[in-house]
Every structure is written in structure tokens, then in C-alpha cells.
Length: 255
Image 1 (tube, rainbow, N blue to C red):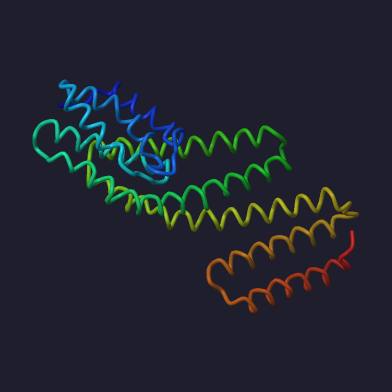
Image 2 (cartoon, helix red, strand yellow):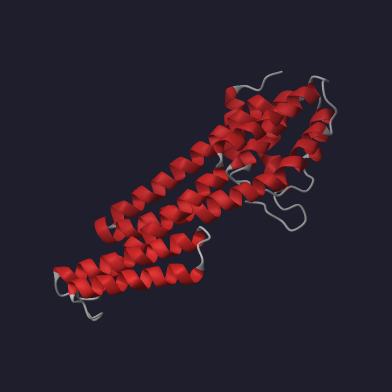
């Protein structure tokens, strides 16, 4: 039996509240069971089988809330096979247990330490340059990306089952996270320069240029360190750039 699109959409909507019933014993188990319940209602007409299916999803579960979409879609995929008698009842649980740890690590690295800080830095810089509309735009952009990825993962998990692992690998989220972190560092450097120019009372254009160049050099040094460059060469490079700028512009370091 194939779950109707309307029912799958209902499951996906419920998945957004995965952590609303977080608890120390089962962590996200109640949220997962609540999310998958409409699909189980559609698959199992027999109340006893439906109760059995729901009970097996009340076991321990913990994953990144966004990446859970792939596991939830895949669990429905396996529940369809269980309902048709093609797989044992333990198959959905094995699927969840296998993926929850790796996908938690991927999700934490991409969403929490890369995507969200990137858009946070974008919002900070945008607020300095264009005001509150830039903050709203950054928030909307972040949610567009994360909702889009969640929907993609849920659909792929439902359609492909175990093969969703291949899709996640092709997305190369860890590599993309590295690029987002580097871009976020650059945005933070630009935001620091904007703050200095606003609050420092810069007197003329040469000093403004000096601040911008030094801030950019500092950001470049940080990126170099994050990429594994040795500490002392990176530090000396930034100091050398600052000295050159000060010599060329006649800037004495005061505002």
C-alpha cells in the first residue's frame, strides 16, 4: 500500500514539532511517534497491528531534528513493506538505529556550525548596511534553505528507503559546511569593519580604507588558520599587511 501525498504531508508537518515532547529517557521518541502516526493509521486497519507499529516507534530515538526527515520518510517506506508482509517488524527500527547517529553528526556540522552562523553573520552585516529588512531577508533565506532540505530528505527517504544514504553523500554537506564557515568568517570581518567605521569616528577616506584592509586581512588570517595554516606565519602575514597599509596611508592607528 502506498501512502497518499496528503498523509505524507501531514507526517512532514508533524515532524516540525519533533522536539516538542523531548524527554531524558527517550529523547525524541514521542515526537517521532507523533509524526509517523498518520502513516501508521493509513497502513494498518487492524487496531492491534496499528498499536504494535506505534509502540515500536516509542523506543529511544535521537538525531538532528532537520536530518530526521530522511529517517522519518525511510521509516514509512519500511512500514509499507512490513504492512505488505515483505519485511519483519524490526526493519524500521534497524533503519532508524543505523542512521540516527551518523545523520546527527552531519546535521550538527552543517546546520548548527555552518549554515546558521553564516546567515547570522549575513544578518549582522546586512543590519549595519541596510537595516532591519536585511535581517528579515536573512531569516527568510535560512528557512528557505533548511525547509527545502528537510522536504528533499523526507521525500527521498520515503521513495528510496536505505538508498537515501547515497543522496546524502552526494549532497556533500560536510564540504559545503567548510565553505559556509569560510564565507561566514569573511562576513564577520566585513561586519567588524562596518562597526569600526560607524563607531570609531573615522576622519578621512585614507583611515577608512586602512580599517577595511586591516579587517579584511584579519579575516583572511582567520580563514588561513581554519584551513590548517601554521599560527605564526598567518599572524606575521596579517601584521605585515597592517604595517604596509599604515605606511602607505599614513595612518597612526588612532581614530
